[in-house]
Image (tube, rainbow, N blue to C red; front, side, top):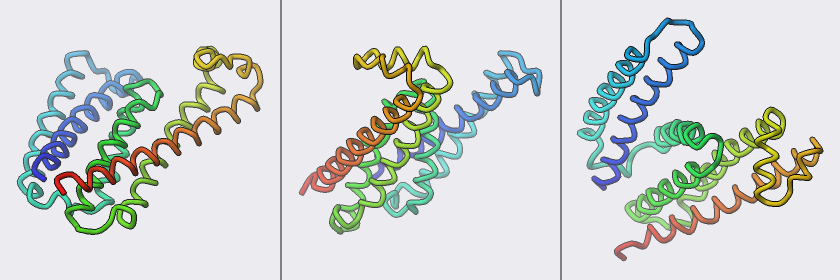
Length: 202
């Protein structure tokens, strides 16, 4: 339980640092506020320091009840980290898959702690994991197909389907189909991981 609390606290600290860094960088790029590189670095470090403090406070209050945290709070944190991973992997869903699997481990352990079956306890949360992945994939796919044809053609060439890049309708149908497959895989794998995690030590 304390391991999950520590990991969640660390994610809060990192999220605060990254959010501060990106906010300062965006303000500078858009020229809304003239910021130097050193100022942006200072903002990122300040955000990280504030995040560490918040994480410490959060850990002190929740280390013993990490499996009782409202799911809504965790969902917000999950969405924030999904956005970070989406940007870090430049629109590819690798980070979303990893986050989903980590969340599934937590869900499985929480189901075991609350002593109810995984089948009736985590279906909604696993579907939410798949939904977040689907939104990311659709956003990346539509942006690639409509806004960056060159990159879209490169991606299709990896599967030997570059001929689809010449048709907008076929490209969109391909995006929707691929997203549906990826979401189905994520839901199936996350459900399996949650089931396995619920039985650890039993």
